[in-house]
Length: 92
Image (cartoon, rainbow, N blue to C red; front, top):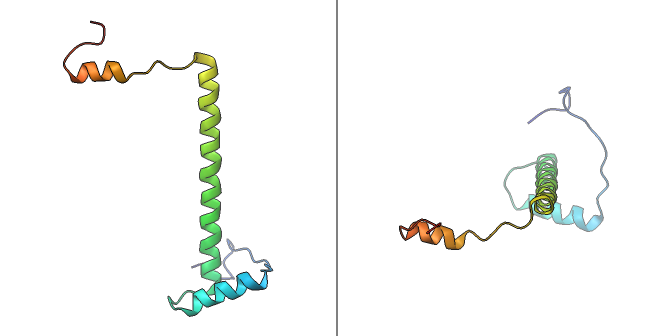
């Protein structure tokens, strides 16, 4: 874990609602040996990753919609794939 003297570490003050602080404190009291700082860094990292994933999913949805507008809806390939599995060619 980086230390406060690490040049890649930034320090700032966070103000938590009392209920959130109490809940987090209770979780830490149950054991595990993590410091409050470690838990908060882990939680913020997880939230940043979640938001990044959400942004990528939204970008993919926009790209799919754009592609559908440009090319039209794709024909359902289920019958063709089924015919291939049954040993027939789809153009028969």
